Length: 245
Image (tube, rainbow, N blue to C red):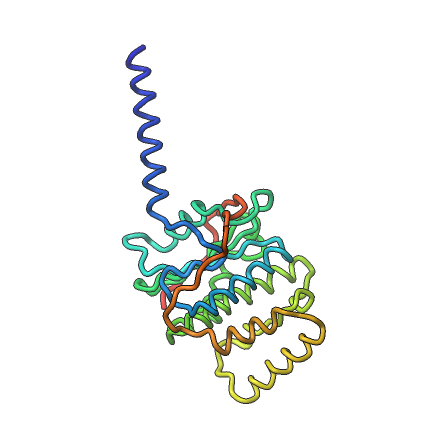
């Protein structure tokens, strides 16, 4: 009997020691944008948080950004899956969550997809999004553009699946313009969006316009949401794709 009690005690001790250690390995989330690598200006950080909050409120999808100075000895796929599970991204009922992870020192990026979105965003499609829209600006050191493209392209795909246009929620699919310089015509195009969307009462085109024009890669850590209480309890099936840059 004593052996049984001792064995049970040891199992419980090891389990709680492991879970406590695992929790300490990963930082706690501060909001939808967690810029631990300090890649964004505080203003850009705040604007991205607002956009991702709209995606959650209007599409029911929790899209989260995490930038890490380093992931150490972890493989980025493993790190992303563990971080996703630790943060419980996505609503518990639907598992519709998505994690955009940037490892600065390792120069790697991953989009981790929750169970509920794997049919919409299969691994091959996510890999193509990274190749076409995300990795080119990251290679140029433009983390702001790369992350914005990842958000807007995946967001548009999810919205289309739900029969919702981005215009309905006050957004324009500007990431579809890829990574070409703005130039005078690009600036005039965005001003056109800004003026006409503003007349319709849309706030997010103005937010996104300001983000793309002024939210590039200057150092500074923007704060998370005040009183942020965590995500919805979702799970990841390990789906998604990763690339080096």
